[in-house]
Length: 120
Image (cartoon, rainbow, N blue to C red):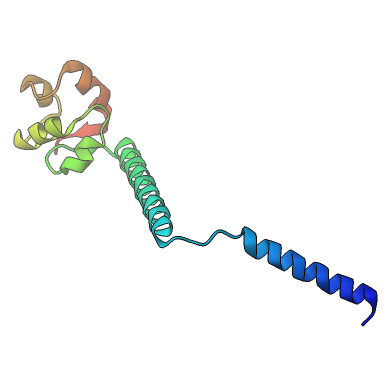
């Protein structure tokens, strides 16, 4: 072997030794924690996408107060779980304005969703 080849091989061996020494061993608990965080982030993102789809659906097509699910009602702006339950308990509706006359929603809340709901 020529001196240059020996020098090249020595450099390669040194670089490999240094790179192996710099690698941190993976801890299984650390890996589990990172996986759990990634899963939680993906779940949160999926919920945000689903919420956006629900909101988009309710904007394009009026929601029927007599058949809407609790989740669909809660996707309307300003409607809480309790208010969604009150809407469901007050069924059937002949006109969306019954939400006001029956004191299920305030005028401000109704005004915010009036163009997004109907009663069949």
